[in-house]
Amino acid sequence: MSIDDLRVGIDKIDNEILNLLNQRMEFVKKIGELKVGSNVPIYRPERERAILERLKSLPSNTLSSEAIEAIYLEIFAVSRNLELPQKVAFLGPIGTYTHQAAESRFGAMSSYMAISSIEGVFRELNNGEAKYGVVPIENNTEGAVGITLDCLRKYENVKIVAEIYMDIHHSFVSLSENLSDIKKIYSHPQGYNQCHKFLDDHDLNSIEFIPTKSTAQAAYLASQDPSSAAICSKIAAHINKVPIMFEKIEDNMANRTRFFVLSDFKNIRSNCDKTSILALTAHRPGGLVELLNMFKEGGINLTKLESRPIKQKDFKTVFYIDFEGHIDDENVDTVLKNATQNGHEITWLGSYLNQEG
Image (cartoon, rainbow, N blue to C red; front, side):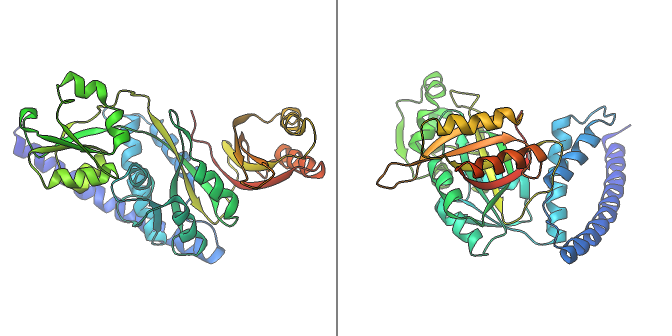
């Protein structure tokens, strides 16, 4: 069988796939009409996970679980936009890792707003200018993002509806085909400092380093200068049409960031939820220990505990807490009511599908 014969077979299957996708989207449009009429959220992470788990369990000789997920995440994004066009605000500029995280969930069809600050993302959501927001919350090497915690406390109408864990990989990109032709390297200082081993291995540490405000800006500058290179994200390279010479060059290959998807609705319960709260403990000896014991007695597993100053004269501290379970679970409801009755101030930030693992 010739290549042309094989291509004819591929074209025939592509026609069938497109026909089936159109049929799928007709169902999606009808579901969207029903959701709008009943005020049900368009974004349903637990439903998307159930579909992925079912599809991954089916026999597949060629497609890996990762490939199936990549294909269907884009189908989900297109489906959501057919149900209701989506406007997504994210910590910019365009081409950042937060942009990459946002696109991984909301796809190429959504309307994106690059916002210059984390609080700006919260303001856009609070003012109704965007339906969703994506911001970083913590990195496994740098720790928690304090301003995100502060904004979760400040903007009470903005809730966490999903979380995204994304491996952070720096790429080395250039219009040049040869490393020997590169005369300067653009990068955000943090990105540059995370890639010293690569730079040493390829004798690039003596080349002029030009710091930039972001890795996205670095990619743009490299796109204008054939004798330069940039250390940046894959999405920044793609947007600026700069070829990737080396895809993963960071010293720490385990570099991972957690992002929050923010909106204004409450997720329904699933069998795998996580809840985030802020707790201002009662001002008495052992207040925090007392609160933590309530969770222990309720059989609730805490996954994160982070203190954050309230920034008042009396040095009060609020605690950010993640735990397994949904706000509507009976044991969670009992613990939080008990905590409130005993003088602890609890602010619910959101219950969402637990992606940790």
